[in-house]
Image 1: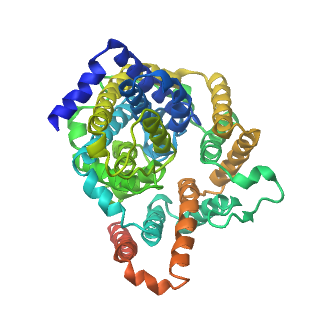
Image 2: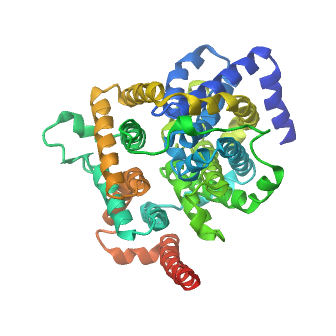
Amino acid sequence: MLELFAGGFATIFSNPLNMALILLGISAGVIFGVVPGLTVVAGLSMFLPITFGMDMGIAISVLAGIFIGGSAGGLIPAILLNIPGTPNAIATTFDGYPMALKGQADKALGMGIIGSFFGTMASIAALVFIAPILASLTIRFGPWEMFAVIVFSLTLISTLVGKSLTKGLISACLGVMIATVGMAPIDGAQRFTFGNLQLLDGFTLVPVLVGIYAISEVITSVTGAKAASTTAIDVKIKGFGFKLAELKAQTGNLIRACLVGVGIGILPGIGGATSNLISYSVAKNASKHPEKFGTGIADGVIASETASNATAGGSMIPLLTLGVPGDGSTALLLAGFMLHGVTPGPLMFQTHGPALYLIFASMILSSFLMVFIMFGAMRGFIRILKVPPYFLMPIIVVFCIIGAYAVGFRTFDAYALLAFGIVGIFMQKFGMPIPPLILGFVLGEPFERHLRTGLQHSQGDLTQLANHPIALGFFGFIVLFFASSAIMKKIRNRKI
């Protein structure tokens, strides 16, 4: 193993141009993560044709750099502007932006960057040492098991909805309803299209996410609906933004978030948009001071960023061991690997050993370089807070529209972006939490697909669930989760 790792690093360091291209890939990935709407998928899509003429080793390294940099870049606008740059950074806004408002943007950014690093390294360790075992377990996950996992994910939403569980569930149901627009995943039936051909493909995640978060944020800021202003925030950077003792205090949180992120990353189709919310929820439930979550504490930033990046790396496990991409990013990585003669699958450890460890080496190197690049540019990031809103907000809107259009090159997505911005304003006005809607929208399609597939296999007989112990186990976790939440709520009320 050590010889293969040494060979992978030797390939990367064999030419100074290789390092320059990797740095370019990481920087481009961070930029695509920073700009709302320009996700990792967009970055990989743009750079994949550029790698056609590259050597296999450097091409894989560049793609890995974009993947790692883009996975971490979304934390920057989430903390500084309350706008998640990627779906993986939704939960980062909960405590990251309040920390920025309190003058702790440097601490929030520093903790987020370190959390991203630890999450990525934990997922690489899982990929290297336990990938074959984990891959053999995921083969046993059929439609009922995946359905149970998704239902379990949706139940965790109850800890993200504040005081009103009813509003949170309504928001989640609204997200699932929006996901049903377009053609059904099994039989292709048209639903809620109203004769509009643009709605046949339904709504994509970028217009929904960026519209509800970014456009609504811009409108409320411009209209004066928010008292806080970015120009009122004064941040003084000290070192990395945090003390070593503060990082040590997050050890349990880091380990827990890594486990959540890697576990969700292994399951195809779930993704970082879900794992960061679930990790935040788990951290809040396990905390001795859950009432502080949402007010601006590092625990929430660490939980979100560590899990989302662990999921990004964890999603490489089914990709490399089974040849199954879990999301759009890994699908493009699969295309890039195959383009250069590397075919992921169960036999990859035997047939493409050097290339496999080159991928591992590229991800490790990209993780370290990502930390240096983001910490080096942190002072520049924080200067965004001093830009007057009347300059900053129009630029954000332009980038949001470009990002929405770049997903499918449809002007319809730009109009959808603005429409969901209005939806976001109304949800804020009526106290409706937004994260449940996003989670419901993300999981709506796989929720329906796995449920219908399971019912088809069992011919509509729900008693067949008794033959699926893994699914029953997850449903048991759901019952335990609600029971423990009710008990904890009673204990807190007694203390009050």
